[in-house]
Image (tube, rainbow, N blue to C red; front, side, top):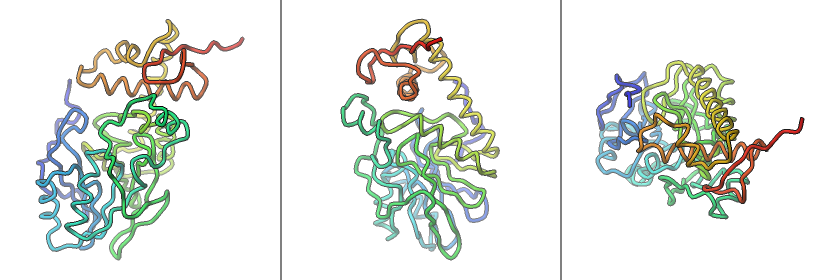
Length: 307
């Protein structure tokens, strides 16, 4: 598989200046799903917001504390509670005395259909979820976080995960795992929801962003073009799913095998989860229907349109 960002090679644990008042410390957790690792951001000069502290890794904690030095951590902000983003929040809070702010615990923000399917246990899922995550302060869409130095606005942007937030500072956005430059986001039900993922991406198009700093990978320097690419990519996947289902009923696993023909085997389970997200979205829009109950292993068929 070709490296999508070959020039992006930060050194784990080293604080890199991105622009005045903003540094990045890469966590040492590279993988097929996290790319080089989780990007932890230090926003501010003397009063610092730590955005996405990352996995519970003592080495990464020490790297963050060393980069902060004599400055004060005023806030610990978490975009979402996957295990590569949130577990270090509590140890960092204990070390610095700063509160942890996020939308809510890992189930917060789920749509009615995703909560119902989760309660039924029909979908599986739960990949890498930090089940113990609990912020000190819950943020709503539009809430302001500020010090004498800076201000950030919390934007509830569910899709990759129901409790996902982005944080905006004028025309700069910390986009978490909703918008990344190196790959499209995993949308794995019931924590991921493609219907609201598309809505979140389209809502972000309303602002002329200068740059987005994502949870993984390099800065996105043409954000609105990237948003349009991500939306078009999902629309292309939807069309491929509908075309394949037109040939006969199929499952999420069967569709993934037919559609993701160039995907490395290690990533096929994630591809299957993305397909399932599309199938749920198409079911709610009455474009397709499961043969029996909606579940991760259900077979789906196209609903014939009346002429």
